[in-house]
Image 1: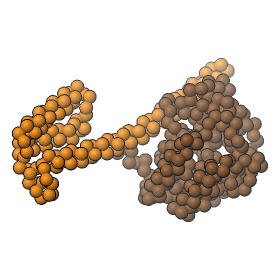
Image 2: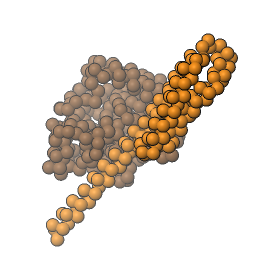
Image 3: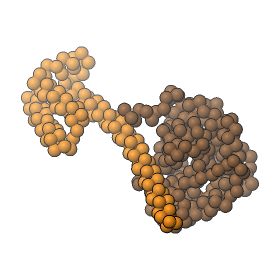
Image 4: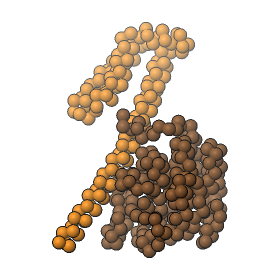
Length: 243
Length: 124
């Protein structure tokens, strides 16, 4: 199950889905996909309808965390074996999907992170210097807190096995969720693995991380990661909301 | 503590009590959230009628004028209420998120089912 969170991605969404449709996967790997349209005000939804792309349109904007979680929730409800987060803006290379899923299929990992940094992908794209600096700082903090060695902690190209997706459907961070969710998964005792994948320069749309907001982003994620690290593992927090 | 201050506090307390009861009756305020405000009004009344309580508390806390203690307690009460409200807001935000997700997914599933149904009809 590929989950494509999309917020105003009219320029790229159709092309991204076409790449998924055209891609031939090894036998035994059945791939379904759904776009989660997070209250876009451009033509994302109309384009999905015209092109017969399955699209969950959120009735109001939830932000990236809420949108991605909708995908996990959907995958959980429909009984998929794995859910893969795949950006609608054409950054992620669908050809890397089998590699990303392999450790989960073999039962060696519950969650895999597609990384730009483990080794250079075919396109050699590795992001700007400032961004790399921020990412290595977050990576360092996460390693300090969990011992989990993940270089590309902000990667949005991630695959969750059954256990991880069930958990994430119940409990997922709200904004800038990628680094924080790694700590949460670690706390649940789930096995995380980083896999080298290929990524492209974004073709259109905007990153959820703007340069102006990056300072706020760093502080917020640091706090979030610290909080998550101090939280008791085991029991799902989602149960508290049902009191 | 001056007489004027005591009268002011009584007026305040009555006003707060009136506003709270009015809003509860108009269904604009839930009873569970009215308690804390009524409690504040009651404590204002208590202090106005029995200033001895505050004067005694001041002496054991070595605060010079009773009115300062009233301010202090007022600020603490407001901080507590605000904090409690941020808790409520966060919980509600979580619930709204979950509701949005479920409604959206259900809507998607319903539409898909309808489409499948329609295409079956066309074939027949």
